[in-house]
Image (cartoon, rainbow, N blue to C red):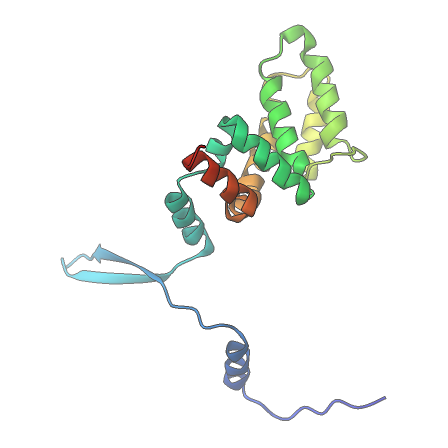
Length: 186
């Protein structure tokens, strides 16, 4: 078996080697002026995070997940996109939770059990990614389900879609084509 021989190398040299492999990125900073006790100005410099970039992206594109879910065309395109990403169960679960709130009280227990079996049961075909504690809390509430029994899971899935799936969809060719057809109707 060949032996690996390592020479002594300083940490800053390793960092330089790693940096050379990556493409150079411009340094973007957020500047804000803070007042101190003695009334002199102080500049606070912070590195921009991925969340800042996503927020800027949403503002420039002008569309957010809430807008996607309101429009039938965008919702259908988003659902199709999620199928290609193998996460269509997320939007299906969120829509089922929204419909659940509009069900008559007499059918609520039956529909709650259906939603649990379809999306939350460990052996469900369209199982959504929720925390075990949330899943167990919903399972306990199935004995007497109320309007809010799926709220925590629905908001968790909404955040997942908002932070993960939606930004990828907004960059996708599917969205770009739909957006161009909306802007240039024939």
